[in-house]
Length: 400
Image 1 (cartoon, helix red, strand yellow):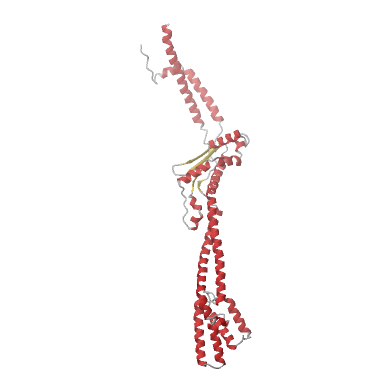
Image 2 (cartoon, one colour):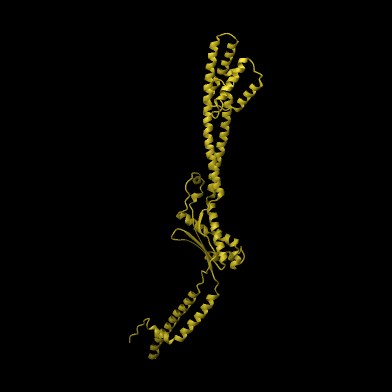
């Protein structure tokens, strides 16, 4: 005799025979699941959305060069931020800062079991994922919705701080290089400037800029007048004028050269008109000698000018070059120093975490429905196995 085939439709008669027990199991499951579901505490979730900026944004070299800042992060930047957020140091910092050992009821810090339980509980409540838009979503769950929001926002700040620390040492080294270059150029500039001042005093060539033609002519005229008299004139006004001119000490090299040549020509012409004799001729010869010879004691003379103009031009060019480089180096150093002190954020926060307005779990209706359905399924399996067992026992009884 062949066995009867089994099908899902064949289960209904079996369920109907055991309906009282199945119904009792379902009612019991409904009551128990309802009690459990409503005894479970509400869990609230707070979420922060952010993405890492390019670490080159805080690079002093990039800022000094004036390049544009990029907000978008690379794949490795996203992975680095997620790794930092899931690291144990960050978790331990959060546990201590918010006293989560007591909040989770796992014991006191320092105990191995308490530390393990606290870290496990914290990790279970934390979720850091990278979504399809390459944005990081950091969410944290807790029974206290305000605490969940505080922990989430604090974690974003801590991740930002640690992410900056990873490149801070390199940025400080770059800043040190800018400082060394600035100090070197400043020292060289002061040394070269002193050389220019000494050369101007030595050769009687006063400053290559910002002086009128009057200064050179006045100095030459006054010193020639002193030589013509054979002694220093004790005129108070003349001495004051000479002192004022020598203290000013700024005259263009071209003006000095042109007026020296003019005064020499005028003196030679006057000497030719006077002839070879007479006191006037001797005075003019002394004046001419003062304009052409450095041994005469004149402050400005052709010999000193010729000997010193090339050296002074070279030194002046050196000072000008150093001045330009020094100003640029100082600006770059100040900009680099500001970039470090300003601590440019390595994260761009799209959305801060706020206290949740509704719970994220438990979903009580789902717990109840799932429990009842699971109880029904288990009941069907159990009664089906019982029916199979009874049917297999009947032929044995009949044969005996």
